[in-house]
Image (cartoon, rainbow, N blue to C red; front, side):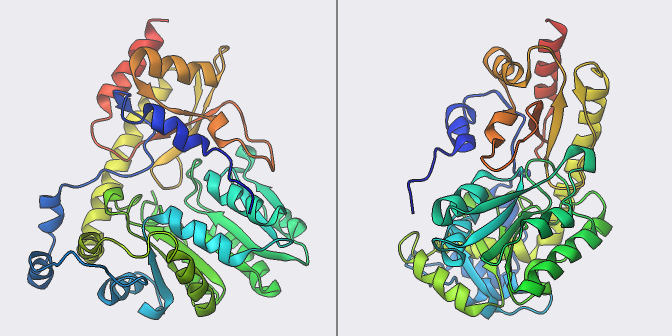
Length: 377
């Protein structure tokens, strides 16, 4: 595998995430304090927390945690779950396990950068399938069908999508699954925002539930708002694939942090409480964002996303989105992500877009600073 390119988004965050006064592009939902999370614990979990010893844990993850994670899927068991130190480690191991030199991958564009750069670095043969704004950012199954080759080993998708917030229509997603199943191709499905749909009827089934070569990625960071736990997982009924990934984990985190495993189990048992709270917060913030953008129709095109807690709004100003985002953060401390951070080597990405987040509390000060900048121009 060649050297990986600079991770543009994370490099940008390294510069600004903890310096900007108003983080208006956060990709995670509102987090919780330890006290808030522990208040969800039943007597057994509280005792497990109080008696916790800080030793090594099992590479696959604690059996009790894997049982709880399996309960979030229909028809899966703990044997179908492999945990990781966050979603990025899971994605990294999955792509290394799924692909080799000469293999071919298909990925949706735009997407989280490593879902493209990992396959490119491993196999050198990757085809993008465009999510187009004129098609409501929906994937086109005909585009996917045309992208497949005899050597295609994996199709990678992400719904609700980062950065667009789109959820594939149910029929479209089923067509994607059927295309993969017909050819025996693994379907890698990044599902880290599942549970934050605006309309519960849009919630997609999880790939691992639908197909024996479905590979579902999830994490405590995004929809649950608990990135500090650093607990992610892959669910799949392909046990040989999971075994290959487990061997790669030996060279990376080796195992998860024991406190994080206990806390993640508590959160997942209380997931409905957490997700209900986060969905309500996203809905409230979307109303505020909608009113904000409606006040500046000459500068922004905006439509609420299907799910998740990020969206890809359009900037129409003559200065361009890169300059707009740069001046906002430098002059008013308002952090947004310009489209250049979602550049793809596979397909063009609209360069008049920026990512805005709406999953956290207290967005009003950020909107006020943003408004002050616009009104003072």
